[in-house]
Image (cartoon, rainbow, N blue to C red; front, side, top):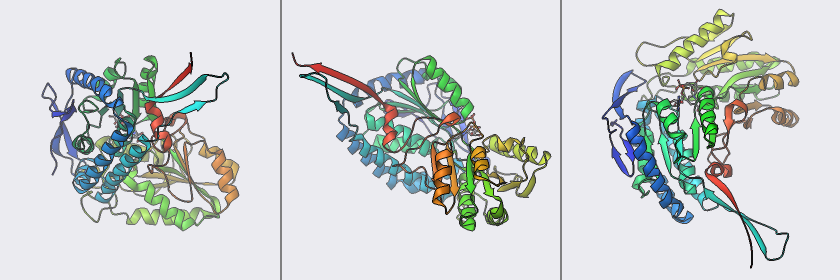
Length: 477
Ligand code: NAD
């Protein structure tokens, strides 16, 4: 079922010119399951030349034809969903049902962007003088370089790929070396649907080598990156140095505020389910539980009960509700964050340690009484660890919600419309979800502010990053 992954350059699937490969492991066993081809500079040069040619073809292809191709790609990807989900689980670890959800949402995203492709309207501006027409066109920005992480191997690529393809851009995707097969399946759906050679290339390699080569290259006109804030800042700085447009989807540390007037047991259950989804390796994960003091014990009891009964195991086991962490780095990071909090006096209510020695399993972990200096209160955990704290006033919880430089997602549960409005207006976040967990659907804008980045990868805003604005003003002679 799991096969080695090749590069895709200029319409051809092939190994790297050097023949080098990178091993791929199953995080549920720690064993190698395959390899991925490694692109060297010669391969990147070919990818760049192909993207240049592909752009010339694709920007002159009508929006209607782009739409038709993308609908075919979405259909093929849906038809292949079971096989792709299986490979995604093997390389990334998430439970099969979550992987299947990611594949199907990926197909929905292609559909959404396909339909938006037909609606990249410009506008006409009323003129000051008779005989003058001024109008605004929206044109594809050019060849794009995209860098995506391993937590959602398909969903992080599909937003970028679909945005580029919908608008008439070409793209070079540097997908994650740890989870290469499922992004390759996504590209294959586009290729098999008839995407012309050169429009989409797929490469793998040493991330810093690839980005430092592609970003300054004159062929590349736009950068899009999803990953951590420190890396995003480096890539945004490089893009700025070379005057390249950039979309940055970076880290978060989302406050989840539960007011005492909420349905507290329901909030505990929903927040726990979303906190432990993909073993907490989600940039919009609710990671700082802030509970109004009278509701604290009910909330903690409900949350911990959920964590206790969560079945942790290999993603292909149908009983599994939470899989392993995607790599050994996350395991080490979890051990460090728990030890740091406990050394400073935090109380561990459940979990706190690795499960077994094969694979990268870590127990769902809940901490209370976490002192202000603990690293978990400042750093994105990106794993199944959560601190829960009490608050007493709305002013206090607004300040705590906005305390960190992140601004990606924020959640609240309350039965008061006034509280929902006041907190919703005050919270500094690109996305705010109140009384349900409603982010990341294709039709909704997806993006952060502050250190969480800039630009959007969904909704009608999703195409903006791939389009230049061109003014034409002309007078009749
Ligand atoms: P990392 O910061 O080294 O890498 C994050 C991602 O960026 C990876 O996909 C990596 O391949 C890529 N990357 C790293 N350096 C790069 C470079 N110079 N050029 C291009 N791409 C580069 O960390 P990691 O150990 O892989 O992940 C841990 C942290 O990354 C997490 O704590 C989390 O904050 C963040 N992360 C965020 C997301 C997200 O969805 N926003 C996804 C994955 C990881």
